[in-house]
Length: 92
Image (cartoon, rainbow, N blue to C red; front, side, top):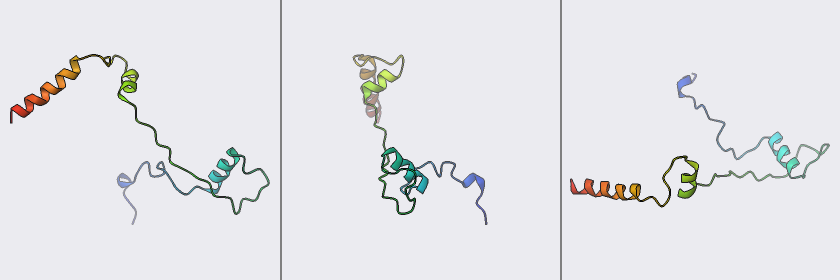
């Protein structure tokens, strides 16, 4: 029985894979200059393949990335948020 197309994952092969194909391992070894043309393709050395995570932006970097965002020294948005939280607690 086949699976319905609506249930298939669209990005199934996009995620991080721990096992590389032989061609991918050879490409990495070429970049590291540990493999050259004519070397045997069987018995390749192990290749570390680590998932690289993108770092999170800090508040100042996020504010600089968004055009028209309030300056870090602006007090209006910072004072409005605690007042709204306090008003919600008083209503309970």
